[in-house]
Length: 88
Image (cartoon, rainbow, N blue to C red):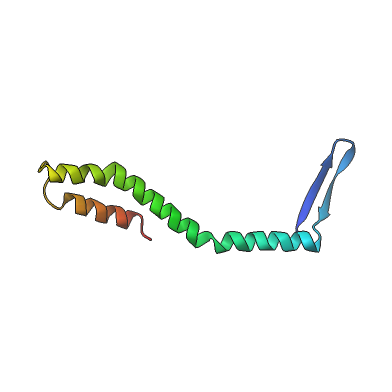
């Protein structure tokens, strides 16, 4: 794949040139680093989504369950639903 860059200047015509080997190597390394971190970013997103859902949906049910306002197991069912909604 040929990579290019565009050179734009106020007193010169716009020019499209091919990247040097060093620039290509740098881009390759950046792309590899990004790809290598994909699993970690996905896990972080799952953790964030679960945390937000627990706080908004499950935590209130826990306290309602403790006070007897909802049936036993309601909180656990909500936690299981959140885990299935945001699988690891």
